[in-house]
Length: 262
Ligand code: NAP
Image 1 (cartoon, rainbow, N blue to C red):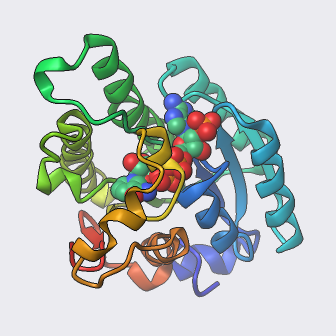
Image 2: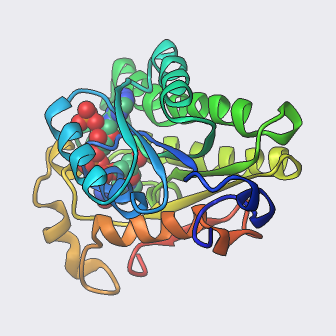
């Protein structure tokens, strides 16, 4: 089972593909990760609003060989997260991994102009949502609780170390929280058979920039990136796949930049 997330001793006993939950799988990095993992994993594709887009990703993953389901779940709503993991387990089997990908930005503003409602949306999605999903995954994967171990990959951002002044300092702060959560949780569950890592994308060409009111952001800022181009969702998915895989069996608490040097 090289390339999957379970240690070889477990894989030898159970040849069914590990179950991977991916949040925000309807588009962008989440969808690319789903396609990348489809040949080797059973997939629970969580989406918030766009059922048609989620169904399209589901069809692509099934065509690539995956047993897969879609589940509508807003990660900012705790009961949605609990139901998401219950359904993943009931309909696909024991959970072996999580990609905490769902995340939001907002329009460019100075901190002095930001509203409480904006911060609540930002933090309940990017931070509380990621923490709640990780909690549900750990409860099921932890060897201490009878689970088989597994791996979690959190989507952070280089904004966590750049601070994103005059853009979205709140987004940067939420991703810094994801970094610290990654480190702390990794150490907490290292002895329970669970690896926890993060990927910090730079400027990746997805629809997230349009949702922040800057549809041309990736193209406009390409020249400022050391590699002189934006990244692709597929390039981020490759790093996520590495961190989930047996090739990263001794990697935990790591935060990998996928940013073209930015
Ligand atoms: P994207 O194209 O905007 O896609 C975001 C996905 O997350 C969508 O499927 C969206 O679903 C989902 N989502 C948003 N809020 C959600 C919620 N409350 N509950 C469940 N799902 C929710 O974004 P992306 O560029 O692929 O980014 C993916 C991750 O990488 C995010 O965490 C982002 O912060 C991070 N990242 C991206 C970049 C970049 O340049 N693209 C850079 C650094 C970090 P709906 O469509 O239904 O809302």
